[in-house]
Length: 121
Image (cartoon, rainbow, N blue to C red; front, side, top):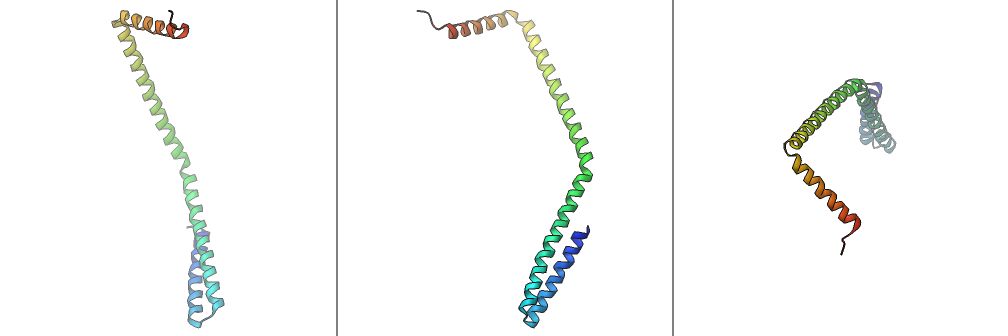
């Protein structure tokens, strides 16, 4: 708890008391002052809580950065391994059926040539 949380909470409680006294003695000024102190105290308390939360985040940032870095490194290693497996698989299938790969490449080449030069009559 920082000083803004404490002071804001105290001001809020003081405003509640002030408003209650104003209600009891039927004083409009005390009632208004009490509500103003409640709102101001609540805002100061909220500011203090936000400040504490930010301090906690900043304090935990190095550990969070290390964790994110480690997870990113692991993910990149997994992606690289998957790419290596895919490349090996493609190489093995190319070794197993080079004629099919050649026919596929020829068909693709013919199709591209046909599209580029248009159909001949």
